[in-house]
Length: 127
Image (cartoon, rainbow, N blue to C red; front, side, top):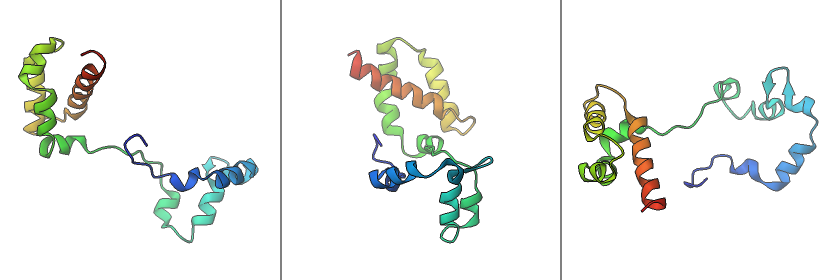
């Protein structure tokens, strides 16, 4: 929601919420099958793969983004000047993570994203 990405908005309507909380649990849960009533109602409208599918999280394609579009972020938050100025991390280690990732040898997107977030946090709360 903080990033304007919310896919549950229809389920946040207060009238729907009040209705759903009034429904007895036996209609919402059958054995280990959660959302029983919702799935039963939607079975004619949604493909079986969705109704019977496992829960999936939403993740950002950081790995691809870092290789294609994020050079601006890397320059802004992980430049040699910034790394040396802060003194928290070894420039060689950060450079190694970047090179491995950009060359496709290893997916270091989570490490790189963490370093970028740390720098953003530092600018906001420490500078």
